[in-house]
Image 1: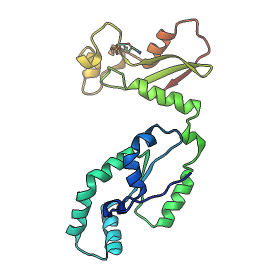
Image 2: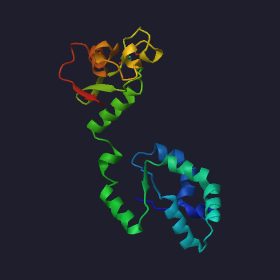
Image 3: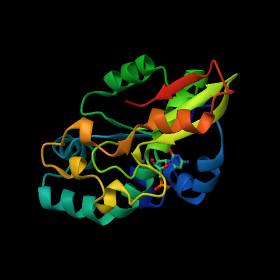
Image 4: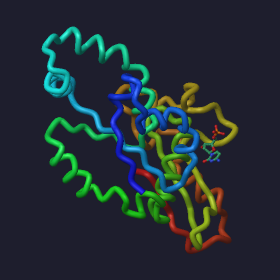
Length: 204
Ligand SMILES: Nc1ccn([C@H]2C[C@H](O)[C@@H](COP(=O)(O)O)O2)c(=O)n1
């Protein structure tokens, strides 16, 4: 099902999709196969459109209305999975949406490669290295066997606590003197010798 709505009339008391989203945002966040798309435009373009639809000219009036609604609009925009900037005609927007293939099943439910690469990004967020942010996931039969991120070895003072002089250098230091273990190294240390024939996903 595709719902199309505009945010504008919410503030003039009419019920809109934006109205519904505000009330039901928990539903939309948890619901699988639901994508929220926000369409924005550059300020100058929005001003031109406002002049046309409101039959007004005064830029300050436009900005007053813009600023009055800004926080509410921003909240809804942040909920969106995609934000598209459309500073052109409606026909161009529809063509762009068509080309985007938004309802492609892979977008709604990632395939395994996308899923494990997304996991590698998540794993990377735990790095303690101040120079690089790397995550690695080892997979066998579509199941995660081990993960690893880069950083100084377990039990040592962390890189982000000043333990790696090399990473602290302005020019990034030499990799030969770096104390940080690679994400792949940590994942392989974790997996041990028994698990052969894994697929390694790494985000660098
Ligand atoms: N799940 C984990 C836990 C730790 N590591 C590695 C990353 C660092 O080299 C080291 C210490 O990490 P910390 O405990 O300070 O976050 O152990 C890993 O790769 N995966």
